[in-house]
Image (cartoon, one colour):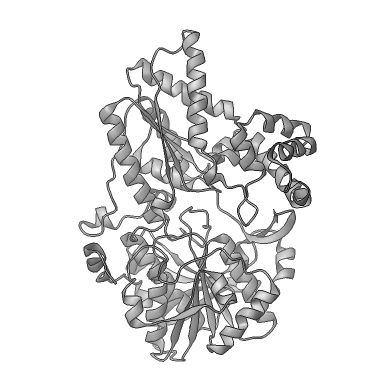
Length: 547
C-alpha cells in the first residue's frame, strides 16, 4: 500500500488518553435517565433500553479480561477520525484480552445484513491510524429498521461468535443502533449494540455530547479554503464570492467558519427561520451590504451560505412540509407522468399559499423540492445551487437599483460549494484524540455488558488527559418526529442556538465585518508545532464552554 510522507509521519502519532482510561477502569453509574421529549411513547417503544443511567469511567485496580468478539460498522457520510475510532476500539479489546477479535462489516450496515466482512488485524489497522476517510471498511446508507434485517445480521453474528456491534454514525444511524439494541435485548440474543457520534454537520450534540467527531477537522479544512478565497478576493478586489457550506439540517459549519474567517456576510438558517424572513428579505440584506461596500470603493466580498438554507426560509419550509406529505401519500400517482404533467399535478394538489410560493421559484429549484429526493425522502439540498440562486437574485436587485440611481458600483460573482472537501482529510489532533477515546470508550462499554449506549467524551476544551469518558443511553436523546408521513422515534437534531455564545459572538461582530474588510486567513490544518496552533478546539466549543 503506497502512502504519502504525511501519512507515514502521521501514523506515528499516538493519540492521548484521559487519565481515567490509562490504566484499568470501572464504571460509575449516575441517575436513571429519560428521553428529551415524548417520554411515554419512547419508553413504550424501548422498554428494554429506556431509563438506563449515565456512565462515567473511573480508575480501578480490577482487570476485566474476558474475550469479546466485536463487529464494527461505519454508517452514513464520511467524517475525519472514523479510522481512529476503530483503532481505539481495536487496541482496547486487545488490551483487555489479546484473544478478542474485531470484524469490520463492509460498506455500511448493508455489510451486516449481507454478511460482507473482514477481520481487522494489527497489520491491517496500522495502515489507517490517524488517516482520514472511511476506506478501511467503507461506508453506506442502508437503514437498519426491519426485523428481517436484524435476523439476517444475527446469522453472521452467531457464525463469528460476535458479542457486540459498534455503529459509528450520525443521528439516524444511532437511532437505528438503538432500535437494533432494543430488538436484540427483547429477544434475549445476548448481542450488545453501542453507537459513536459522527457527523461533520455538528448537529449531533446535546448536554451529553459536546461535539460530534469530524466537525473540528472539517470546519478547519473549510476555513482554510475560505481564507484562501478571502485572500484572493482581497488581492483582485473585483468579485463577490458566494460559498455554500455543507450542513443540510443546521448551520453549525457556516457559523464556525464565520468565526474562524470573518467574512462580510454569513447567513444562519435558524435565524432566518426564527425571524420569519422571506427569500426577498435575504436578497435585500445581501444587496444592501454590496451597495454599501461599493460606495466605499469595495466591489468585492465573501458570503457564506449554509447548504440547507432554502428549507429554513419559512414560506419554503411550509411548502416542503406539504410536499413531503403529498409525496408520502400520492407519490405513486405522478411518478410516471411527464415532467410538465408532474408540475401541474403538484400545483393542483397544493394549498393556495404553498402554490403561490411554488410558482415563484426557478424551475430547477421547484423540481428539486418536489421530485428529486434522497433515500430517506429528504430534499437533496446539496444539489440546489442556493449560492447561485442568491447571487442571481442579488444581481437582479442591484440592476434595478442602478436604474433607479441607488447603486453605482459593479457586481461580479463567483460560486463555490465546499462539501466533500471536508469529509475525509487526515483528522486534526483534536479529532485524532477524540475519536480514539470514543473507540476505547465503546470497548469499555462492551466489556461492562452495556447495550443501547453511545460512547461520549466530555470536558473537551481541557487537555486530553483531563477529558471525561463514558456513555449515554441513546434513548435519552430521542423524541418523536414525523418522517415520510409517519411518527418515528429519532435522535433530536441540535440546531444553532440563537441564545448561545457562538451565535451571540458572531451577531455582535457581523456588522463590522460587513462594512470593513476583516478577513482572517487560518491556513491549512496543522499537525505539528505549538499547541496553540495544533491542538485548539473549534471556536464554537471554546465559546460554549467558556467559564
